Image (cartoon, rainbow, N blue to C red):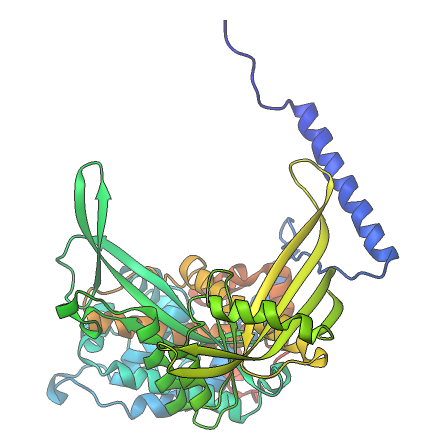
Length: 508
């Protein structure tokens, strides 16, 4: 005799869904009555195609391409000038494709989200797609093979691609495109590390990091690639890729059996940021790995502001000072409501943090945010109380009137870099695909992918594209543009008119 199923019946599932919906309506009415404004959930509508005719669909496709390509055409001239200055590592007599053409081709691979070199060869060389690309981008005089791009990147100075990337960001900053999104008139930059890819064995590359795994069949070696990323992260959700620092085995200390690590790579990233943006007012946003003296000291030397997550088990001496000084600074208390959450802030200023065997010290300031809110539990269908606690180390003294901007709009924006990494890994940029196992070429493909993400991110927050993204979603919109370019939707006359139209870059 079979056992009775533990799975709820259809009627029970329907009753549970009705209970959850009723609880959500009740919670929404309670919030409305008390004046609490909770953030709305944004999702793409589950509906059939909104187009009633071929002409209507063609008009929509033309508008999507015009909105997206206009951003590329606006930023491309500056990119081309920088790319043209990169020395060509090939022999001049054997060159079939100009270096600028090869690099633009690699950039378009990322812009149109090609999953591999093989897919780029197959898709971008199709007659309709190629004809459309050459009309939209006259600089693409010929179409190289993706293996040609791989061979070029293997010999190219990848630092030149990074400088091109930084030149584009500087151009946007000079044009004050991000001026409305600053935190206390500072540019918020988040730094975080992530694994790019891993392979079992020791035969990949001498630059890859290495780790030991223990399993049922014994130990085995795995090599992996780890990257420290730096992004501009704004409170409206716009995230701009900046620097990528690859951790390499050679940067460690093999004699002492120590490999490269995030904190060592952070020192290199900080030096690069200072070199590229010498006078830029920066607010550095870091996670719980970085509240240490060797990290905070260069930040103060570079005159950077910073907000660093402080875990409970980290910097015990600072926590002792917080506990002892809190009664003396009892007035440092502020209550606030933000996005449907009731927040209580407490902060302690002027803590002396000593490190390096008590030979050095830094003044730090700590803010604690305890918040509570209500939401519907999807399992029980009941309205439940939720709480959370956030603690940050601040480089500047804290006051009640700066807490919302620094903590809610600034420190929490650090999550934007994690969202950006998830987008690059799982939403079309194929972050975890090597594209090449040559170390230098891998870094080159990575740089072109991040530059392509920058272009798409800027386009996503322009007024024309944002309107369509709200109805289609980001991935669906980019797919919509790619399909339009790959099929005979765009006439040569329409493309000529688009290229002749004056371009303005207006962010929301």
